[in-house]
Length: 588
Ligand code: ATP
Ligand code: MG
Image (tube, rainbow, N blue to C red):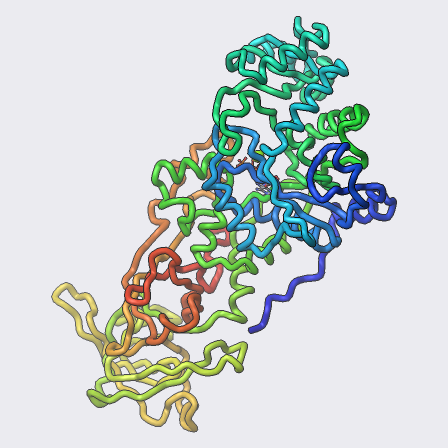
């Protein structure tokens, strides 16, 4: 097998940043105790053996999608290129929407893509909820340093006093309460003495800041809701913008890479970490946040909320529906980990938002599979072809390469007989211009078999063609000296009727009819393509199913894979992964 060449890393702005950081010894003084922890833990550790640490931090509230693959390839890829570590961190600080099912599915998919969070003896798979004690400890330290206060305004009042881009916010009446009063209330919040929404812990920064994220952001809110891992132990939960930098710092992350919408959060990220370091809670050097443009793919939705809606409302058959851009769906559809990594490599990394055409993803699949996929023949829309001068009951073997790019893969063989299945579209009683396949009087080659001359067809009472007739020309079999004695322009695929194996084949089209189904406030459900799945009863070349292969290039048709859920050797069910030619390019 020819492996997909892994392109040499192309430089990008993140690599430039990392190169500079390493050249300047920015992390030279970093310690790592072998596990996440605050200054008291890390200062016990040795110099960190990992030159950089990155992380992939999914929230376990849905399945991973192709957008996540970009972040996974980037974070794990950079870590491995720089002899560093990449942590898998479940960002499970929001109790309401998170479930263990998602944790398992995320682990499965990151491994399937071919990445590992192990670094030497370190496992580096973490849960943000394991840091709740540290986060709380840090919150008390901030209160004691008069850098945070308990606010008793309602959420509505906080919103109303926050100001706008053009107007400053106004201070909360609770902003200047004594630190020990805030501390007492924070402890009462933690101990469950106050109902949801009655108070919140806020950082004390600047209600007049031009950056809205610095106008006393909320750190903790009260939620009397059990958590999928900590149960009922906590009834206060940290806000994302506060939890995230703390998680990064506890794990000794050097480069915290996130998507562009977090750019405005960076000042707060730095504010919180700097103060916690000044207070002796965190050890320097601290992590730094860097933003890149997220992946937007045409004809695809990558919001977990919207994907959840498609699944819950039954518009698709679950998270691994082959029409979804989830990694589970793409895998079931037949995408290989190599093709997805190749796609992400080709995307590169930039600071500018853009939309990538779906055809780029498909092309990566073709480029990966063409050199390695086993070839076979399938007939999706069969019509019978009778070779009227071929003896009844006779069969003979024909030979074809398993993979034309790889002679070492050897040959496959399959029988030819008097009755064959061919594609209905390979015969026209009245051919249009430039049609080189079967029509009365025309000659074509049965691929890997004989040249045949079409003699006519049989039709039913409605005029529908039910059988095509032809005569074969002896001495023209492929691979024999007479093969080139007759020149033909058409080449058609076929399967012997007596030997063909039946299979259900699922043909997929775009899930949405619009390139940007959820742009603006569009209702993406209105753009659902009612014809996104088309199931046909097809015939397969004998030996296709039951061989070592479970993915093929069906000649002239495209790339196909056995459905990992529904296919059995007795009843094959096969998905079309992609056609051979681009069917996704922007339509004219
Ligand atoms: P959603 O908003 O749909 O819930 P999310 O971005 O909040 O998605 P997370 O689980 O928080 O989902 O994402 C984990 C990581 O994957 C984050 O670091 C995020 O930046 C990254 N990520 C998510 N979507 C994309 C995308 N389309 N392109 C690149 N990276 C992405
Ligand atoms: Mg998120």
